[in-house]
Length: 568
Image 1: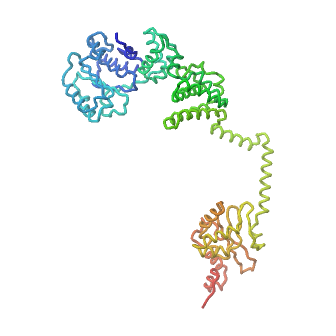
Image 2: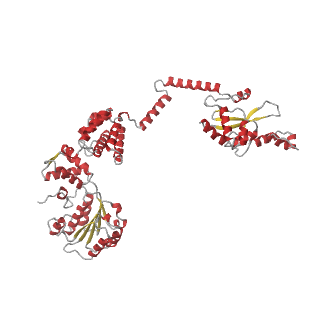
Image 3: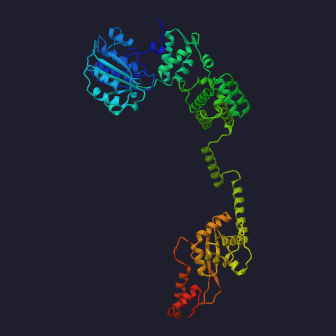
């Protein structure tokens, strides 16, 4: 007798055998029992979840000699022919190899003829999404208004590639992946049928590797069965397939959390010398760390963990917290993405293991921010040890700094009383203002002759908080400096390395009361009165003093503002 693999041997023969797809089986059985047979069905879902098997069961149910019935007999000529794939009225078509419109036109011609011996002529088109657009268009009218004896069953793993015009003409059934527990149960039944011993731990590993596909699980089961000598164990799987055991992984992670880099790299070398691939080690390490994260989160279900809960040492579990485990997973995921383009995969893996050996000192940014905030709050509220002493010392230091600054920086009045032309160096500026003035004048002298002249005859510059005060000889000079204050601020920033504003001030004479000269601000705030000049403001103020001589002779105002004289 020819060998029959487990996937074929365990293929469901009726709706009762269709495990894991309860919604599909119940709906189809009910529609058959009530005589509500659709002319087109669309089965979608991942690979190996029973789409084609369900299509064959439906075909047997419709064409069974005792039917249509929701439970085909399986022994009549029609059922046997469907099982063997030799039925003349159940035509299976591979959509991947029959994609052209000519193939579909052949179907359109065939549907005109009734079934040869059965009740229905049924077309099962697998991977229907592979058909071309022209082929789909050719199908539209046929599947919308087929003869009463025609039933189409489409199966696809990529539903999004099926045109909406096709979907709208079919009854759609979405197939689901199998759960791990369901796969283990079916594998145990398969092992029992062939009288083979299988440890639950080994079957659990197969079920997780299958990723929800029952066909993949059966295929892997057959592969492992071939070298298990009648007894499937996890140890044989690790030995033959090259997997990292839980003991080896726990050893490496124990070295990492303790910061023992030489021991961790040596343990890694021992594992790789056994022929394990870098990619497989990365996958196993990520699975183990993921399981640790689940355990730390309170999830200990065997179907979710990569190993039984008993194989995770409590000492190792308690050594990690969730933030460290999440960071480790991120490193392993990044390694998986970078292996494709790296110089040497082993070097990349060794680098990750070396970084994991510093995981004991890892602190997440969120926890670090919370700690800093807590320290600030404790100091501010005086709850931290020594906070009162520290606060008093900081306040004393600030007062001392302000006192020293007030002694070193000359005030505006002191500067005018001194009348000295000596260089003024700011106490906290770190540069010579006289030297800065000379450099500024030299830098703009070629392109801004008038501005350079105004700066050249200005008084000694000095700092006032975040601005440089430029004492100008008259209002005209102050207006010129103010108009180009942005340019001067940019030059000062380039030469001094500090962002300082420029404030021109002019010497105003009060002839009415004969008082001493004094400085007055000349529209220092460039954001106000833009476009005006201090010359105009001063002229207006001077003309409003009520002098009859001034009001009768407006030319005196011009002479006053522009420091000119009559040549007539």
